Image (cartoon, rainbow, N blue to C red; front, side, top):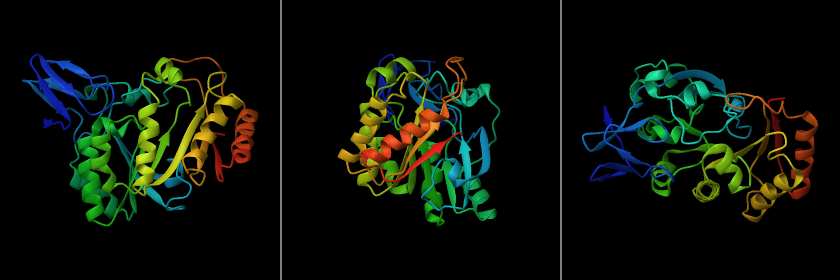
Length: 287
């Protein structure tokens, strides 16, 4: 059991301060992410030291196409997510509690040593939402930096300012998933909100983190020219036209069996729209 960071005690439990949900968690209860539990008036990180997935991936799979290209990274994940996207491709580990998925028992030192032993230049926190296992990620990232490794964050970016601020000195690169330039879309389909994500992307830019952005195009929901245009305008208006933009193809999964996969023509059209809007580098994923 590892006590979590970023919470405050209440008379009848605790309030988590890790993400904008700010869950009020009663004694014996858990937050939306399922990974933080109140016991005896304290908040504990249930997934600390218990990664449910480990793999060696090409860095381009994160996707990062302009950071250490042609290299491999050690990818790792614990269970948990503070979003509830209906089409989640990793719902078997993101939408479950730690005890519902298989796990390894690996301390941060062991993760870093695995990376060093295999001669990998970087560690990627990925597959689920790394901010829900913030403490484990931070301890690994801080140690890996001291050992000369690079740290990669793959995230939806839905986190409070202070946890992000503490992590930034340990980060080298990030791919942030913008679901749509529409707050109502976030609330209806993802159980979150847009504004904190955009603010956190700008904070990463200000900190000098290598950034790439992904936008999953879901047929009929966020794939219109107006939606794509809004995203590209926001990027150019905020000095992000040099940030690589990945349009990714949606496939039915989890709680969404319809519509069918995004037509390739939709992704090609989005790419042309982005280039016309001034985005300098555009990639198409899952095709």
